[in-house]
Structures are given as structure tokens and as C-alpha cells.
View 1 (tube, rainbow, N blue to C red):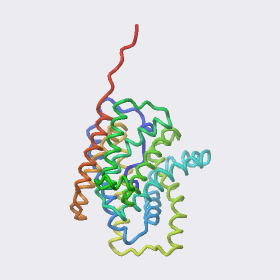
View 2: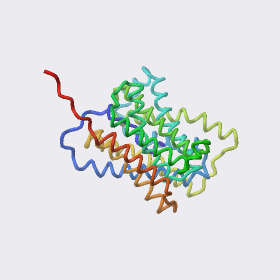
View 3: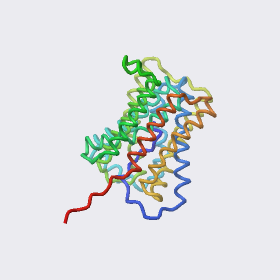
View 4: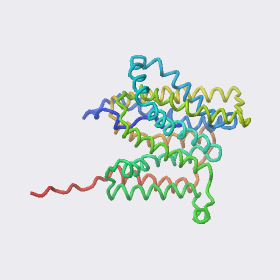
Length: 318
């Protein structure tokens, strides 16, 4: 959807040593709006097919943000002319496929479970960065990845070992796992590409590329009579997905990165999972299952092992 804003620390300047406290409200509001995307998408799912929802959200969010980055239009056009295939490929993976898979998954699973599974994406990013970029993983990150993977399997199998043995898995949760993988792959590709464009203009460019790739999927839905049947509530949900949950969310994330630095702003991503659970309970009457809690505990343990525990420095030989 990506409920997660499309940026990566490697694209940003180094964080200042003492970040402004004003960046935290922007970051918290960003992740609250991002969590609302899961709720709105679940709400509108019966009325709009997933690729149609993906296309219209990306297109409208791009249209809203495009005037804001007018000073960067020349640089955006230059990048698009020099590296069109890379821009489209990264936008397709990080936006079209990632969001389309989330919307597919929400047809067969609840928003709370989807939010928990998406918390796996930073762990997946670390593993892919090791495989694609050759970045060091280390013992603690490896253990964290294993713990988080165990948590994801508990959730997908609904806590039943025989479901794993006989591959009786929930298709909705598998779609969400695929979305988390696409987000991780997008993050690594974005780090390798180094487009050299400021964050918000790059977001707008990738939103447009993502909408372009989503259009054929949406047309295929229409051809197969999977047409939107939006009523007032559906239109309201789509307006949220494109506006507060789309353009405003990306804008706030950009501001939080500027004031807090990318690392601190990105670490607050885990607030999204908490917000999704609270909003789903209040607005959708969802409740946490036992396997959600067990899986979440493994994922949290994996995140802590990977990000909090630092390897002991080896003293240099004389």
C-alpha cells in the first residue's frame, strides 16, 4: 500500500546529532495515518477490486503532491529521461506490487494480522541487503532474522504446526508476506540505484510510475467484470487513502526525516503495527488472536536482536 512511506535512509543526508523534538509529532502522525490505510483498505475491499484501489490511490496521491514539488520538475524529468526503466521497475516493486498484494491479502485476513506481518519487512531488508549488496549481517542480525521468520510462520499457520507440514496456509496472509518481501526488495534496490533526487520529488515520481504499472492490472479487472461499486462510504475511504493516508502521510514522513534523520524516523515505523491493532479494534471490531500475540512476540524479539544489540568491537592489532 504501501502503508509504509517510500523512502530509505541511504537516500537521505546524515542525521544531525541533536534532532529537533518537533520531528516526533510529524513522525507519529505519519505512522498513525499509515495505519489508517489498512483500516480504509479493509473497509472498501468489498466495493473496489485490489488493483483498482492501488491505481487510484497512487494516481490521486501523485496528483496532489505534484504541484508541491514544482521546483524539482526539471530534475524529475531529467531523471525520467536518463533512467526510465529503473524508475518504473522500482516504482512497480515498491508501490504497485507491494500495495496490490496488501489489498489482495486484506480480502482474506484482518488488518491487525496484516500490520503485524508487515513489521517483518525491515528484517527481510537486512537479509536481502546481505544477498544483493553484500552488507554484513552478523550473528545478532542473523538470530533476529530467524526469530522474526518464526513469528511470521506462527501467524501464517495460525499457530498450527500441521498447517505448515501440509502447507495449509491462509492465502491472505501469504499475500501480505509477498508484500513485505516486495517492500524489502524495493528498499534494497532504491539503496543500490542512488537516484540522486530529493526524497519528496522522488516519492512523486515513483507514485506516478507505480500508477502507470497498476493501470494494466486495473483494466484487466474491468475486462473480467471486477468493477468498482463505490457508495458514499467507499468514496470516503478512497479519499482518505489518496489524501491523508497518501499525500499527507508521505509529506509528513519527509518532514520527520529532515528533522530527526532517516534512522530515527524509520525506527518509529513500529508504531504503525500498534496503531493498526488499536484502530482495527475500535473501527472494525477486530481482536487479536493467540497466534498473533505469539508471532508478534517473536517478531519483536527479532527486531530487538537485529537493531538494539550491537556486536562487540574487536580491538585492532598493533
